[in-house]
Length: 181
Length: 113
Image (cartoon, rainbow over all chains, first blue to last red; front, top):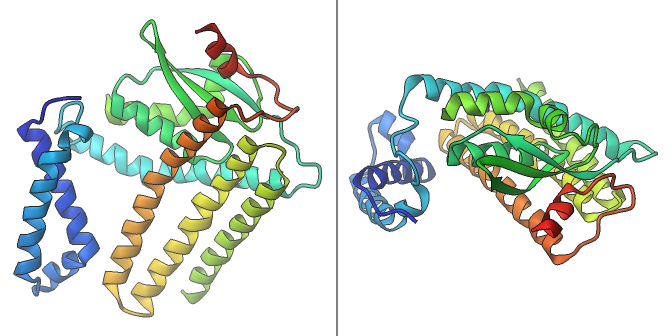
């Protein structure tokens, strides 16, 4: 666990405050020019207080890492275009399997290597893999500087780590590396 | 526009149905979890997007739309973490995989350590 840093507290507080604005609906009132000062001030105080206590759990690397136009654009493209396409493809595939009379499953636990170095990137790739139907990340281990993912795959096309990795996370990994490296 | 909203909601209902059928039919716990992700992703996101468009266009309530968007975002962020924890917990607890399982690299590597 890291020490609490000023940059970490600031960035956590900004995210908390944005969440507060969205959930209370004040973000709409600001544009209409009738936001309530009381709600805004209480939100700011609570956001800073929460950030002081919790930022060391969230910020493990450089706090302003994502504050870079190229990375932000990549993140938006990934989460609005690339990932939904993969998601729909996988959804259709698993739905077909569940509804077909013969139930064609061929499950297995495979091990795939990953080149993503950053902690956030690893978490994001693991979550992306779990969120696509058909694959669930079971564990992440690190041996000799090589990160390995253990994945439960509903249709094992290949047991070879390289080929399986290409089939499971081919495009996803490319984009995650573009965002976090 | 109303037709687009209806189509979105019907598509997500279809995927929710397919996921539920999968949960009942799949042979073991891990495959059931795979099928339940079907409900959790397109099944929910379609309904949320449909509701978002409906609340903006027909109700004129932007606040509701913003809350729906935040709900969808947090649903997508938190769902895989729970799925990951359940799968790992089930494996460590000794839940058996079904007979069709072709390979188990996870179990082999755990024994080596």
